[in-house]
Figure 1 (cartoon, rainbow, N blue to C red):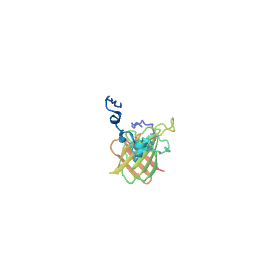
Figure 2 (figure 1 turned 90 degrees about the vertical axis):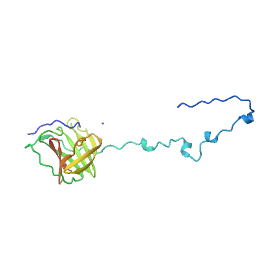
Figure 3 (figure 1 turned 45 degrees about the vertical axis):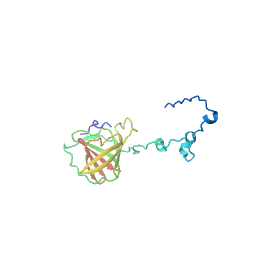
Figure 4 (figure 1 turned 180 degrees about the vertical axis):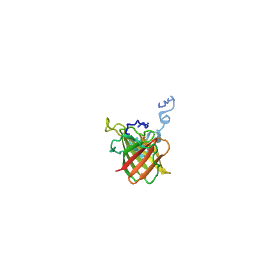
Length: 198
């Protein structure tokens, strides 16, 4: 039975003054020569001569790179109830690098994502990026992006959020998965998300 499901993921100096004493000495002996180091810039130091703060660099003024430029080109998906109450056991496997679209959400006990939804995932060496839209019918251009580092072990993906809005990996335990050919199944809560490689 098909049904719309609720989201469980909530697609973060004051200068010193000096006085001068009045004396009776003659001008020839009372006047002191100015210290060249106190008033004259060192011509061998171009930074000091130009009045540039050496602690500041151009890098501090540059714009930060975006978290991810991944476009969300996935189709709209609705959550669907499973025909049985037990998901197939995860098998792990080698995840092929590339871009994946969420194509199905099979709900066994509780939903993982709200439908309708769009989710694009890009896998590269050691990095996963996501682009997520939980309201594609009313906000078709909305896209919450995120980037994670990840490792796989014991049939599970352990993702760590680097930046952006977490969708799949939110600091909890690793997510079980099965990679088979161009299909990736990710187990989130009581649901299994199916991704197809593009």
